[in-house]
Image (tube, rainbow, N blue to C red; front, side, top):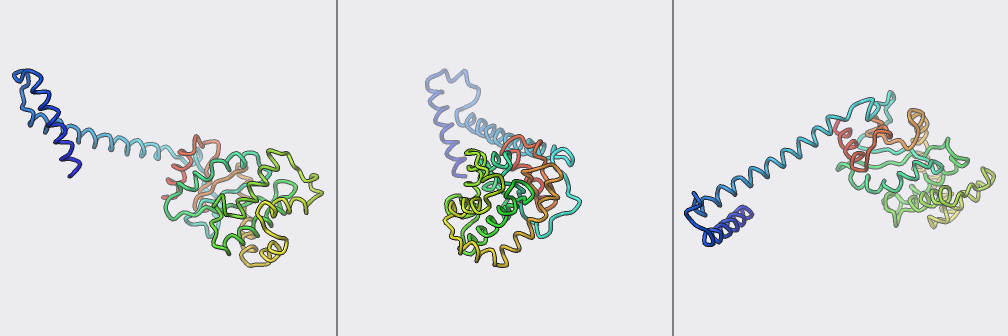
Length: 258
């Protein structure tokens, strides 16, 4: 109401000044009546714009079609309600590219939705070693109460970023599978985690639980490759249909409501 009165007073004053500077006989309405009519048209226009925006969004959502924008998995992932799962690999160039925009996608997730990274063991010379490192570091983060999506504090994020940079930017291959210890140390050093902390974390039930969960990554990767984004463990978004960050976020939101 306060906004409406302010606008009305502004229009009234504007028209009164116009009236004084022009011939009153040329205006069929008094400034007061004109202000009311113009204000009424302003609110009608504002409502029309809001309706148009809502309609455009509804039309965009209506265009999300099974087979074109997403695939319904025949075997849904267990315990995945209200989650966005990404199947990825340190050795995947497209995963590396998506890692640049992933923070924005996570930030715009629907309220209550949790992001869960699933590393793919079957890709890269050190896929299995990467699984162990990531599972241990996520366990360490959670024990410390650190959000695994925190780019500055998360040990998991630091190691993942280090592996991406080493592999894709520096072209480090750690002797093509002949230097597992060197590969592991690259991640632990970046994360600031000692060998002892790493060993103890791997022995915890949480790390073993994560490794078991990630075993389902391979079946998902077989559908269309990686990265693979799965909403609520059921809907696999087709990456070739993603047009932008906003488009990906809109698809996630729409599928989360199904």
